[in-house]
Length: 295
Image (cartoon, rainbow, N blue to C red; front, side):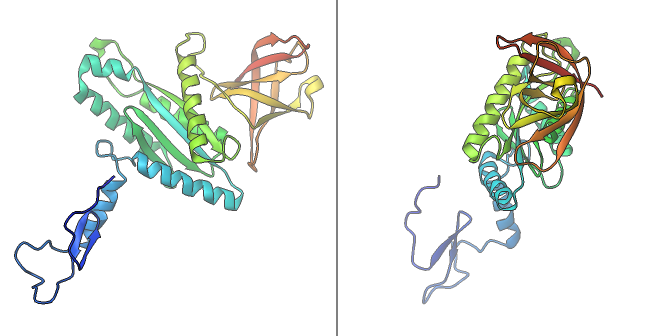
């Protein structure tokens, strides 16, 4: 935060960190040593620099908080949704340690370009700090934001590193949606950060590395067919781009499931076709069914 300006003289007005000087009586507007007026182009550059990360060219954390609050307020007025997507690079510390920080900076710049190229004009990509990035996605459901996150992940995986070090680029991500996952910007960011942590945990396990998932709230699965589940809606417990898990009312699940994912407060639905890959019996006779999407 800028400190107070010392020695301010009457007639001066602070503009963008500089002082605009209104000449006092007997003073010349062009007197020697007087600060000059900033041009419109210079003022614009100052405003851009104040909200931009200097390394990657993405927006910075200051812009993120203000912009997210604006988009949440707009969504609340219109009855819409806005999603937040938080990402970090898998194994980035090893890249810095083994290849040096200049190479690490290059990786960050390339990742930022991937994020920028993967977003729409109405979306905002931000550098949150270190190797963490955030994107604000207006009018995007949780399922829509998962599709964006997976697109970014696949593109980041193609960033080339020297083969001799045996490292490969990877991306963790977590997503959250207003208002179902939180109604304040701080809570939404915390939820997104927790889901990013869950994604890291899944990636650390070779059995789940292909399809990282995280716990969710406010999602329902309405099955079009499947015996006792016909036309009933079930709570989705966790979800990822590759599949989801939900509670089924019996110990045995059908071999084929088809239906719609419904998000609280969102008007559109997402059609899915799935096959069960794991069925865990529960003590009350129900089962937790893990499914993989069938494309």
